[in-house]
Structure formats: C-alpha cells, structure tokens
Length: 202
Image 1 (cartoon, rainbow, N blue to C red):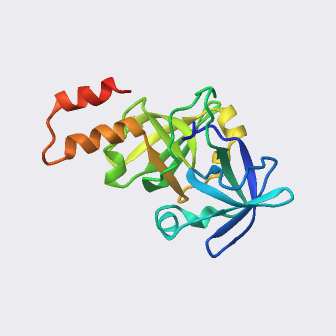
Image 2 (spheres, helix red, strand yellow):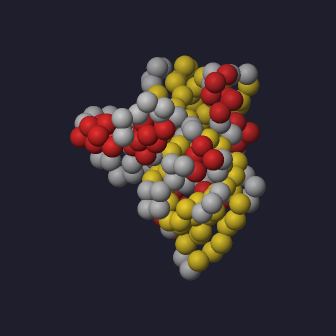
C-alpha cells in the first residue's frame, strides 16, 4: 500500500528483459515493495547505490513501460504509523491515459488526460486519482478526459512538469470508488444495502 506521495526521482540505469535497475538515494531491502511510476514492483537485487526490480509479463502489458527511462517516480510501501497525506494507493495500474492538453493558469498547470471508458467510470469530481504514482485531485470530469490542477510544489517534487502532450501515463483509480463500481455492476448485486454494508467496514 502506498500514499501517492513521491519519495524520490530515481535514475534508470538499465531496463533489459524483465529487470529494471535504478539509481537512488533510497535503498530498499530484497523483497521490499516499491512503486515505480505508480506500479508496485519487488526489489530483487540491491547494489552500491542502485537496486533492481522485476517486471512480470502482466505488469509490462498494463503499464506505459516506454517511460521507464531517464528519471522515474519511486515510493516505498507504507509502514504502520506513517502519515497518510495523499490517498490509499495499491500500486495496481488500472489503465493507461494520455495527456491531451496542458494549459498554464496563473501559478498552476492544468493537465487534461484522456482515459479509456473503464477508467472514466471511476472518475469523480474532487475525488482522487494516481497519475504515474502521484496522488492528485480530480478537478473536472468530462466525457472522455479529466482535468487536474498541478501546483508549484507538485511540479517541483515530481516529474509531471516535464510531461508533454501525447505522453502516456499510468492510471490508478481510487480504490473505494473502484470497489463500489465493481459491486454495483455485478449481475447479481444486491443494491445499496450491500454497498452500505461494505462502506461500514472501512
């Protein structure tokens, strides 16, 4: 489990086969979970100032793996007692979105991202979404895209300010919204009584 708050911008040393090697100040232990551009991966080797994670065919098929070059976002898994300043993020990429527009608005950058239908149904105005592992608030939901407002601190602490129109990004929808949508879309779902039951468990 993660928060969507980026720990560091790590440098990609190599990406060959199923192994991605990163250079970072953060040093995980073998077996630790770490989110790389929002995808939960497992550390399989630790070197001098570097570590490697392994990608399964399932992961490669569902993330924008072409972005695993240059710099990437990394976040270690949450520990018991950590502050939750973002939102609960699992590190499971639900879809790949594409940046459709970028507009400057005062000190902020408005980022518009087009999403496939299976992700759009989980977008709620003022709800949460993780973009390449970054926890953000959805300011506007349109028919096929969402609008996000990036403040200067977010642009400073992440790579989002370097993104350009056309770039593909990893999308993780809000876990609670996704769960509710799944329950309500089941053929034999029991309606709001079941939803309220699950809500009380949170």
